[in-house]
Length: 75
Image (cartoon, rainbow, N blue to C red; front, side, top):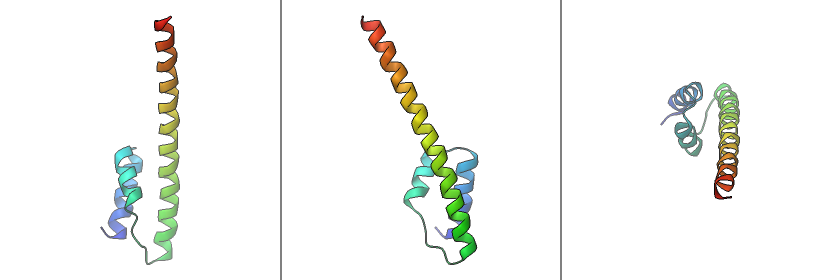
């Protein structure tokens, strides 16, 4: 996959908050030849990272809630 296609795919994954695509694209970062593309990629990677971190926190909260519910039901 070339860098232009990768950037397009990353933009779509960010817009649609497609977590699996974001993870896949994060593992397949291409090399960039233009400074503009590098800057754009860096900005998009930061945004993707924020989405993934937010989802990670959301999952953590859900797990804590499930744990509390389980503890309550077992008492």
